Image: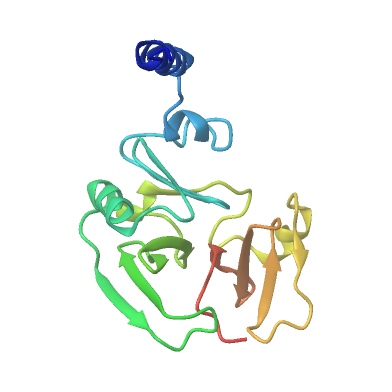
Length: 190
């Protein structure tokens, strides 16, 4: 009976080398992947860009499900340390941890993963470092919403005058103007 060990070793080595050669080294970074979804002028070392699938902080992109430590570190590099952290056990979606930054940006986490964001003030001053990938901004008059791409009112919302900009971004109108924008999972009691 022949010993096939050397042949098995050589075939195994060839397989490993073949798999290794499949990686071209051209795998795009998260920031490169996001470049197609977020306008290039938003991806900037000194800015935070909010979009319907997550956010970009400086040159780092985070989809919903990204780790809390990484997201908070990147946001702190751009916006400074958080102004508050809290946890709510009784959210309809389950226990939610929230980290807030200046400019009324709050990012939501569940089980250590990014699940949503909301912002409730017009970006000016220090908050001007926060941009929103939408044709709507905080403070925009409500009568201009109807002309915005993807806009649709959410009829019978128990939270007030609520609207959707797409299937991923929504917001609220209060006092005749946009008062909040959000994406992902929120701790809203409907």
